[in-house]
Image (cartoon, rainbow, N blue to C red; front, side, top):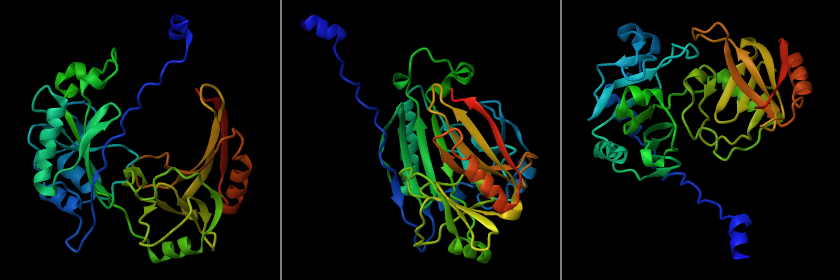
Length: 335
């Protein structure tokens, strides 16, 4: 019987992956944000418009990965750098704002944890030590102040699934052990007087499920900078989609506060999925004007529903309120 239990009985669940140590947190004081001050000391162009930086250095292939990138040769390199600091390049990023995310690669030798720890020691000379630990299949360390942050990540080979092939690792074997350095400045525009009035007079149209992390607990994505705004101190708002009192703007509270003038909404789109491998559902997006070099416009998430057709009626009414076109897309299997 013991043999049968071993063969057919329930097996213990594997231990869950660790989800990482807490970041070392700082508060913004009279002296400013300690992380952005360090980035400025390193010579990263955190205050210039992206278009000016691109005009000075040009966009070229990443020396390690080959994809288009903005290489920043005048910034101070970290010890052990495989190449200088870079900034991500994409046609969805509006060029009028400062670059808000940078990346570096560090390699001292073929030991991923040593590469991360040596980089952490270097940053600790300026910011003090941060906890180092395992997050899923990586080793990490992180410093945060307001929405700015420095994150170190390494992928030790013994924590990776066997049989996976990464072409970049084949081209440059040092990448298997490199420490990836990701920097976020936390840049975010403040509300204008009109936008503040829109937010204060807005009423709820549709709530969003709570995701766990409060709004503004991370830096905004660079492609959202035209519409994301800083939540003012003490503001408490339920997550969801709202309409301003005069009907001239949408106000969304999700991962951040978004303020979307009605005149900048080109159309609404509903994406629909039928249950398959995934559960299906639907999501509503506003396609908005943008200064980014992308003629398609900027897609901003507005709402979601677990049903394939759960947003059709709501989107139809919202398009009427905003006086803009609506595209309810074809339903595809959620594979």
